[in-house]
Amino acid sequence: MEYLEFKIKCSEDFREILIAELAAIGFDSFLETEDGIDAYSPEESFDRESFQQIIDEYQEAGQISVLEGKMPKVNWNEEWEKNYDPIEVDDLVYVRASFHESKPGFAHEIVINPKMSFGTGHHATTFQMLKLQGQIDHAGKRVLDVGSGTGILAIMAHLLGAKSVEAFDIDDWCVENGNENFDLNGMHTRMGLGTIRDVKLQGLFDIVLANINKNVLLDEMEIYSSLLIPQGYLLLSGFYTEDVVDLEERAKEFGLTLLKSSAKDNWAALILQKA
Image 1 (cartoon, one colour):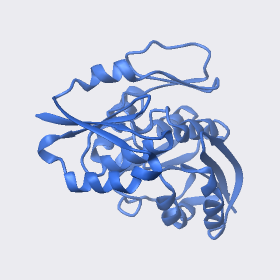
Image 2 (spheres, helix red, strand yellow):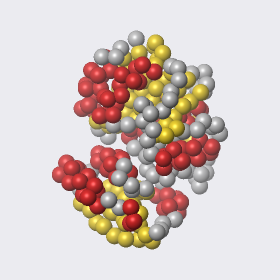
Image 3 (tube, one colour):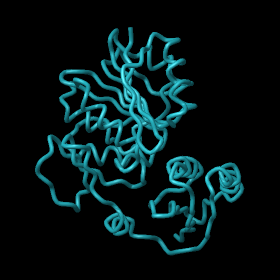
Image 4 (cartoon, helix red, strand yellow):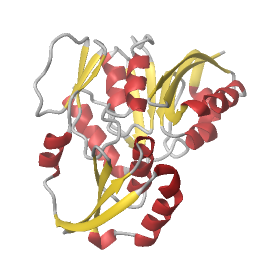
């Protein structure tokens, strides 16, 4: 199988957006670069019309340019090993791939072998979510990770002492990768496939984690609230600092109060609590 390779230069704020959009149309591997991202799609399933629509939509705002090429099937493990660096979130957690050595001095360690660049800890949204998780008592709690990606936030919840963790994603590639990462970190949880409206969630949760994007968060806010116990916590990220007001106003409609916000590289994260 041959792959089409797209070297995409873009502003930093648009890397995660493009990865998400391209994954939705069949791209199956990504590498972040100094200038943007390298994106790869199997040639036989490449949807050029949808690809061009995505590029056109974000081209001006994201200062996007594209260089297209073709390459044979890639040893992605080798590529990740070249490009994936460990992440340090204060002294809370050290996030590494299996080919990195452990490092002392951290309360926790997460091993992630990402098949795509979702949720590796490198992006400001994931970094902030991990940091905020460290400020919430997870011990003995029931936790839900919405749009789990690599499963990194679910794994963090497990390490922080959660009694049970449920997770799901709309992408079967993420589900496969997430389950592999759960195994690497000693979790017996299996990631579900589907949207929050598709998966069959039972009962209430003490903590709900959702690192997705503004539009999805606004649309699903009522569901998040309905899944929380009174005084339960909702941690959100995946949106810009200028979007915080919109998220906070939406959350208020469903009895959720903003307790704390953080910002990194113009990306925001929130801790909300249900009345």
